[in-house]
Image 1 (spheres, rainbow, N blue to C red):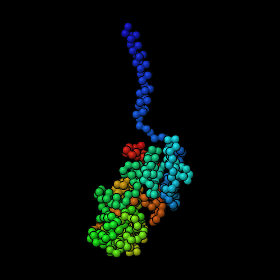
Image 2 (cartoon, one colour):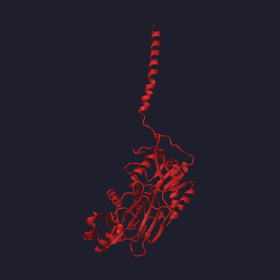
Image 3 (spheres, helix red, strand yellow):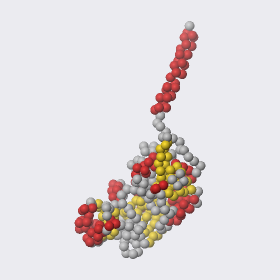
Image 4 (cartoon, rainbow, N blue to C red):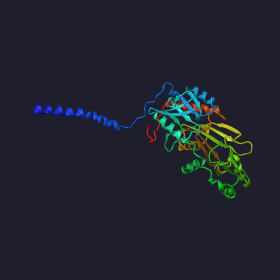
Length: 357
């Protein structure tokens, strides 16, 4: 009698299991997080190609990348379109109608793109496991895509212990009558610069009350916000190129016309320094600064006080000129090396939550 009952029990259990199993599988599938759709488009050319939203020029850069087996496309900010058709999202550059996900690497240097579009591109490339230069958090708080103001940079650098010159920002209505206060705080001459970088074209050294008033009346300065800053007496500034957490180039810039302005627009002489022989502490500072703003590529401007010998950080540029200006050949070469390494490494993207995709 026991054996028939045992057989009947086994049959019942098997029937119940067969009936419940599809329901369990469906529930588990429903709880599983959604995955991004597979990339649609060609994969044959993607891993060895790069898109740089760059604008005009760039022939030297294209040739340097081609020498390392990287096919490069230069486009402007006006060449992008975003479409969602049949619940499938796609971002293309319009000249050849290529999907951005078909490029192994995308580098946005044209900051005319609105922040909303930048974060959209970040999200899109992250889902397709593509590399976005200077977009390490891809939508998170540390994303290097948005160019911060100089004031933002100086405050953040100071908060994290980096050495920056004494700086003040005043409302526009209070700046013009504040010469005496600023001169007492910083000495003269002091530096007056726009809150947002412009290659140094509007940076001025102010020695007298009349110079401050004249500068603020200039029609080119209408609507701009300014910073006042202590002038660091120097023998020129240094532009330290950080690519992939390594210092790859050091360029010394100085003025020979007596203006004492050594920005990209004001410098009249540039010299290439060998990175291996440059001050190690300063190089480490430059790497930290690039990392602080989430930049894979950055040109960090530093200056040494010729009296105290202290070093100061003047700026961290996440969108430096590549393939143009002094030593464009050398800059193009180190950029091409960086891009080729990133494409070969196939570094996983990072999602908004900070997990590898």
